[in-house]
Image 1: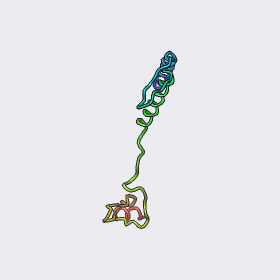
Image 2: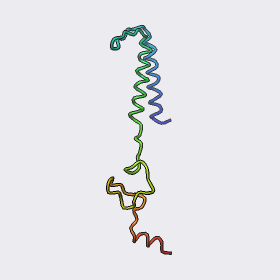
Image 3: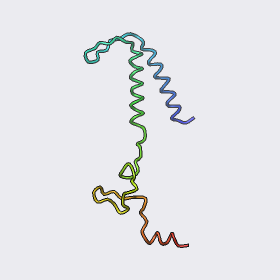
Length: 103
């Protein structure tokens, strides 16, 4: 087992023990409302919210390719003067094209 897996198992066990020891009823005031619930349920909701926030913050970013979302076949290879867009798929020089096309 990896260290990360063991750490997650230990944290889960400790969290379960702490939550089960706090089962008495409490009152929580949220803005204008008073909510009567058990500490167990409130701690469970906080743990779930912390997990979701941690997952969203820790996930890798989505990689974007190029400056534009799409490619239009009518775009010019040497760029559009208005947008500054240049087709990055066609970056070979004439010399490179001649070298590749020679047999």
